[in-house]
Length: 179
Ligand code: GDP
Ligand code: MG
Image (cartoon, rainbow, N blue to C red):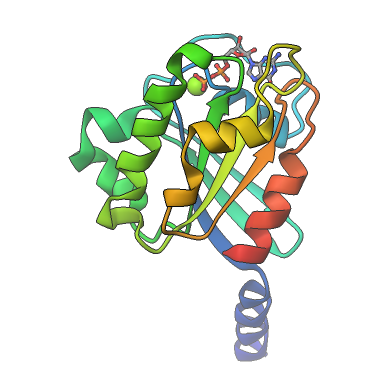
């Protein structure tokens, strides 16, 4: 009986796909807020920048996502960041769509990451965040500014708001189909 139940357990766990996702982006883009919103928390977190990293596990449809918010770790100490990219299947790159002044920084950062061997087989989801704000750039404009056409990996861009929650499920939906 013990054997039966353990093979049953194994079968059960196989039915859910596991997907490891690293979330990255310039500070203030909304990574922490998106993580909290995805976890259905009611309040946006304070604006304290992420010092270390946050990890959230969340289920969406048949996928169990382990989401690592590593902030700007990739750029600071690549050796440390390397650990988080092991077995990683997707990158979520979060953009503050209202931050025109740093759009070029964001582009350079994005391409620097996606050109790295660490993520050569990863899918890329760009969240053009803060779409609830009136001065947000459109998804098309963000797409153009970031030069997404030059990304070699499979990518998608989704407008989002950590405040209203729009676009977040659509983003997870795309990931669940592509990881
Ligand atoms: P992080 O540094 O990328 O983790 O960014 P945070 O999640 O800390 O967000 C930075 C600031 O932007 C905070 O004041 C958030 O409340 C705000 N913020 C994040 N996402 C949104 C959004 O979609 N809409 C609006 N209006 N504000 C947002
Ligand atoms: Mg943060």
